[in-house]
Image (cartoon, rainbow, N blue to C red; front, top):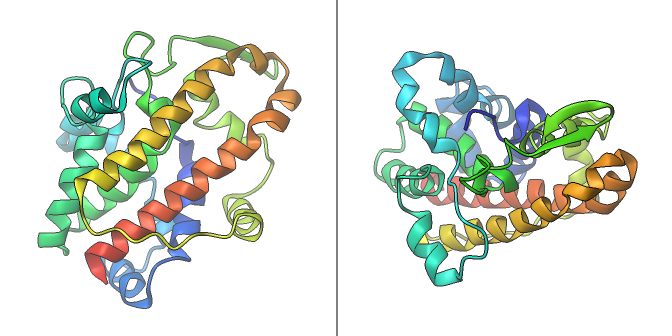
Amino acid sequence: MTAAAWGASGHRIIGEVAESKLTSKTKKKVEALFGNSSLAMMSNWGDFVRSDSAYSEATDWHYTNLDSGLTRVAFDTLAVKQDAGENIHRVITLTAHLKQHPNDTNSLKMLVHLVEDMHCPMHLGRAGDLGGNRIRIRWLGRSISLHSLWDDPFVDFQKLSYTEFATHLKRVRPLKKVVFKGDEATILDWAWETYQTTGIVYASQPDTGKPYGYNFKYVSLLEKRLVTAAEHLAAILNYIYN
């Protein structure tokens, strides 16, 4: 699977919102490691670096393909395996690595991106259709994939810059303070929530032919995914650096 989760705007929205929930100590440390770049702007590094052959092994880190209808027990077993995409596995291992090696800047950049990917519904999609990449839909007169819809077009349909969208989300969806203690079980809980959302997105396919109706019906789900990703990203970073 080659599509990028959320697209540039979606990743930046999550980073911008997450930055507002960092402790002052965490924010100072992260900014120093990023050369004073914002969390929002660094959120796309994990996709941009795909052009560097040195990171070719990370191609499969952006998704975890899972069959539909899994029980929670089966999900927990399969989600951490590495033979069908390594997103969840890498979020777990990079978090543990950075707790021990907090100055590893490139690992931090990758972790930020992969946590955001883990909250994009189609990045925990089915192997048979490559996370929705093989499901064709019509959107505003164009033929795109269901996966692609949740990368860029659905976010872009809101006609907001990433900062405007982030400001909107912080106003209408006050962020919760999420405490993370470094345990794998919590990351699996977060991934399970995304996996359940994935089923809703697959079922939404018949609605995609009417974009305005689709937006009315599913924009709240989009907003929830973006905000939840920001809450969880901030919680992980605060765990590592606070």
